[in-house]
Structure formats: structure tokens, C-alpha cells
Length: 570
Image (cartoon, rainbow, N blue to C red; front, side):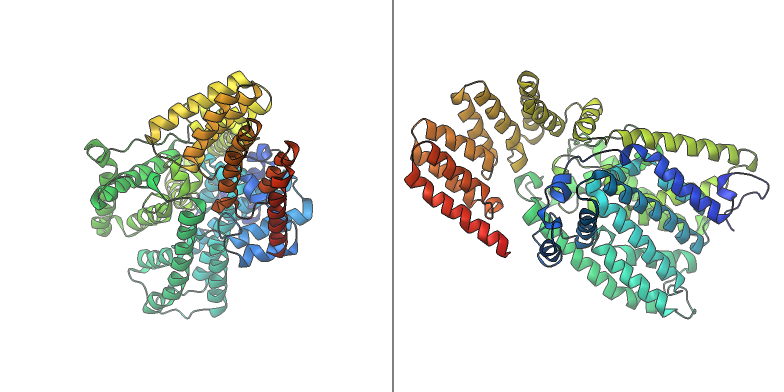
């Protein structure tokens, strides 16, 4: 094989292919042992634990045919969760095992793609990808099944396309492989649409290998790109309308030029950030600090200018360096593009970057590492390879341990990002549920402080939570006046905050302001996010009934029954 360095060495990278494959899979599972024993964390409720669509065949139908039924339209990802729920219910170990298995499969497929391309160090690249700690967020976080599944399918698709000889000028195309590549590409899109640029990657590979892309490929990728672009636009639309990636907090300047400049700086800094984390994976944080962007700062333009300069420089030097360096760099940046800030992505509300955003681009970096490894003197390569495996396995093992549960991941976040209002709000909620009101109150107030500093008066649904929790604490301390102020503050930031409106309504009801209480329940039940909710009107009816207003309670019970019926019909 092209990546064998020395027949006499005993390094794992030069063992028989089956030995390498088994070693890769076993080391991957060893590195992720802490994840296999972990539970659920952030967003896993919406995707798994509280997702009623996983319970029956009707839910499976809605996963595929009701675009708004799931947080994003990734039906194959949610189908995998549906199948697992039927197999082992809500036991988290099974979901973690599947995620790790998909990650290992992705590493094996990466090796296959690189071997097919004749890239030296293919097995090294596979091991680096499997064991690099940057991948932990995608693998140890159940919600990121969309990453592990879509990448494995995308790499399988790429391998099929390469096997078909479609991009090789003058070669006869093997149609069965071509068809397999198209099918796997479609399945990858149904897992996560970030894989949409795959046809462009094929064209770049063709250019790098042969200096041109055959006309049949130029024409053939058009339908693939059309499907990919359509799915990408659908995802972007859902991100804006359903997930919430729109509004004032996603406008960064008053002019189009200013907006473009702002997003360009974010993108340039993000690209360099991701490269730096691959080179030096410390610290790796679940919620990184959100950068302050200043379009008028010359120094902040250094990042996008560096990215642009490197791209132009590699292109100009392609006759001397070859075509591969510029193709590799453009491919890496292109696979990062969906998460660079040019299009609205809801998590950018909390941070411009996240480890899972570069899961699909990271294999490109790993391939470069594999090539560079083959250029190390033979006398030291074997020992360095073994040391590298030990270090990467240890780093990934340690990082996976931070994903044990919600509390562990957010406490680790605060160690490296003490201004994470998300961490303080989440931990405060946990502590308040335990009756630790003093420390919880401190966290919520600190969370509000960081939010005000970061967003400067902007409003968003997520910002109301610490105020709501402070209201709950005030009620527990028998201070209804303070509780009312906190609930109203939460509602001001998030008019659709059902729990805050309900708690405020109960306070108003107790104080005899019945009409005001019902007005709060009306606002809450009419909010778009609550239009199918039957629990809130039922709780309103129960409160009215218990506090001496059975005549008013009747209409709320009827509304709850109607919504329950509608839910069963849908």
C-alpha cells in the first residue's frame, strides 16, 4: 500500500489492513468509554427524552411528512432515534454506542476514500480523526447524531463516486457505484444538510488529480447540487422561522456593507479558530466565549485577510506546490461555510464557534496530518506514531468524561468560560430545584449581568429564563411582589414564555385580579409555540376551579380537551 513506511516496523499503521481496522475500532471505543456510561445533556430532551414522535408509528410518519414536527427536518436522524427507542427505550447507553459506532465507521470510510485517492498516510488520517478530542462534542452528545450519521453516509457516498471512476477523464463509468453514491448522498442530506457541498468536493478532487473536471461530471453534479441546495435552503428557512435564528439579535449592522463586514470578520476568525483547535486541542469548551466584533478595528480584519491571502497564495503557487494544497484548503473552508456566520445559525446567539461545527471539515485536516506523518524520518516515525495514539486516546477519554451529564458539562464550561450565561442559567436551575436558592440566585443574577453586557438590550426567547427562575425563588421565599416583577421581566424578554405567564396569572388570581390573570393565560395559549399545548389551559382551569371560579374554569377545560383531540388527530 502507498502509505506503508517500512516493512520491518511494527507500528500499527503498517500492520495488515484487518489488524488496523480492528485496532481503529477498538481504540475508538476505548477512548469513548466515558461517553458510553454518560447520560443526556443539553437539547437531548427535544431530540430524544421528551420527543413523543419516537413512541409509535404515527410519530415516525410525522418525522418524515410533517416538516415542522421536529427541531430540524433531518428525518433519517430522527428515524435512527425512533428505531433505538423501540429497541431500548430511553436508556442512554444504546444511543451513545450507536454514536461511537458511526464515528468509527466514518473513520474507516475516511481511510477508504484516501486509499482510493492514493493519498499517503491514509490509515494515520483515519486514526487521527477517530481519536482527535475535537470530535468528542459530536460523538459524546446524543443530539449530534446528525453529525456522525451524515458524515458516515457522505464519506460512503464519496467512496462510491470515486469507485465509479466518474471523475476520471476517459474512464468508463461503473453505473452501479454511481447510483450508490447518489443514493448515499441523498440519505446524508436527510441526516443533516451540511453535507450539501459534497458534489463540489468531487469536482475539486477531479481538478486536483487530473487538472480538469470531465464535462460529464460538470453536467452530472447539477442535479445533485440542486437537491443539496434545495435541502440547504429548507434547513435555513426552518432555522429562521421555527428554530428562531432571526430578529434583531441576528442583525449586526445598520447597513448592508456593515452587515457584510461584520459577518466576514466572524467567518475569518472562525476559520482560524477551528484550525487552531485541531492543532492545539485545549481548552475544548461546550460554550465558547462570544467574540466582540468591531468592523472599524483594523486588527480584526487581519483574520479574514489571512484566510483570503492564504487562499490566493496557494492558488498562485499551484504550479510550484501542486494543485492539492489549494484544493485541500478550499475544501476545508468550504465544508465549514454553513457555520461561519454568513447564514443565520441559532447557536450563534450563544457563541460564534462550536467544536461540532467542524466535524465534517476535520477529515481534511486529518488527511494532511497523515501525509505529513509519512515524511517523518523512518527512525522516529514508529515511536512518534505510538506516542501520538496514546496522547490522542487520553485526551479524548478525558474530554468525553465532561459529557457525563448536564451538570458536569456546564461546570466544565464555566472553568474556561466564566462569562457563560448559558452555564450559569442551567446550573442555577439545577440548584434551585434542589432548594439551594442562595447559590442559584447568585447564578441567575450573574447570568443576567453577562446577557446585558453581551446583547446590550436585545431581546430573545432564551433571555427570559433567569428572570423566570428568580420569580420562582421569590415565590418560594414568600415574596409575591418580587416574583411578579421577575415574571413580568421574563415576559418582556420572551412574550411566549408560558410558565412565566402561568405563574404570573396564578399570582394575579390569588390577589383577586381575575381578569388580568385570564389575560395572561390567553396570551400564553395563543403564542405560536403554545398553539398545540393542552397542559397550560388545563392548568389554568384547575387554578380557577381551586380558587373559587368554576364558571370561568369551564372554558379552559374545553380548550384543553379540544387541543388534546387535535393532537391525537395530527
